[in-house]
Amino acid sequence: LQTTAFVKSSSSVQTVINTWEEYCDSSEIQGQNYKDSLLVVQVSELPRAADVEWGGFSYKEIVDMYADDSIKNQKRQI
Image (cartoon, rainbow, N blue to C red; front, side, top):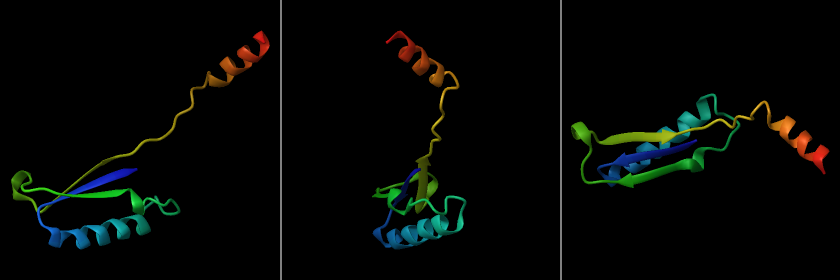
């Protein structure tokens, strides 16, 4: 999980950090240390005159069901 908060004013930074920490503490990601995955960027303008805009991405590692077979085949060839 990586999250970016775009802020227009540096006065919003502490509110953004507090909001992110509260989200991490209360959501399903509890037990994971994602508090350090927040990046705060100050910009001059945001769409629709917003004060803060959040963005980010997450991923889930997926293992190919055939991955084990290819490893077994490689061992057989050796």
